[in-house]
Length: 160
Image 1 (cartoon, rainbow, N blue to C red):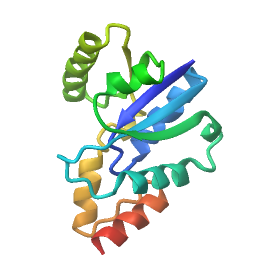
Image 2: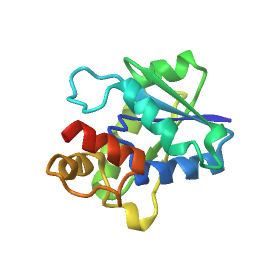
Image 3: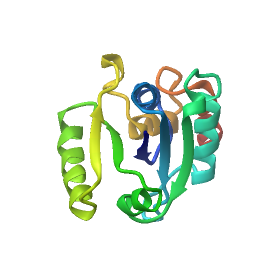
Image 4: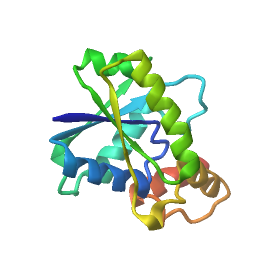
């Protein structure tokens, strides 16, 4: 069975990778979908994010179970076009759950056959978020505890 793991992944963090590994333990294939949203001010282009994710998982034992794609539009449309019915969402804390719960209900309203499964990362990663990592990197802080080495280097190059 295949599942979609959607997100901006700007940048991918150890929390994302933890949820990804959990998803690969549950499903035959995990399709990471990178939303192309021109209204968001992303620091990495969708193609850069794909490269960073590929490099981050290259040596992982689950890498062969992961496909990475970008898409524009509604996630339910992507799911239907690819004959997929299940979404994975990482939930770190209660505030995430409230937002993700609303999104899951909206996705179900738009696509009655779409289900969402919530996965929690390891406890020590519950505070890690892409926005916090970007903020730390912007101010020249050390992000090596939150992202893979290739991502830390890419952030350093962006904010140099």
